[in-house]
Image (cartoon, rainbow, N blue to C red; front, side, top):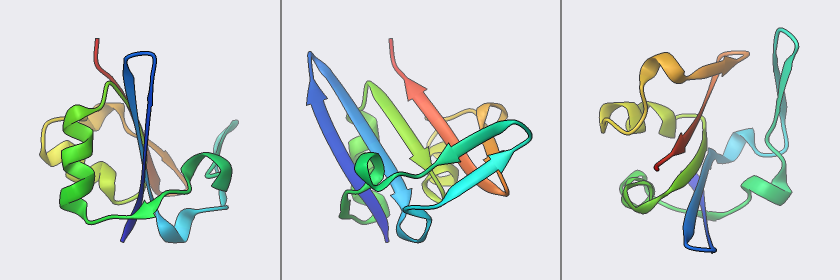
Length: 96
């Protein structure tokens, strides 16, 4: 199950989702580094459906792991905008 964290501040809704097994790990791609820090990514366990509902309301999102493919299928993320760090997908979303 993915971990979901929702932060509401200054009129923005930040949705953070990552796969539990990625928490606390660091991944690299060329000179870039993705740290899945517990201080940022730790959230509560949630179903994919609950994560997707949260993403519908998000103004900003940070996604790591299997949730990225679900967001692509829902039309929230463009596949061409996904970074892969050692095979792990990472995507960000900003609604303006």
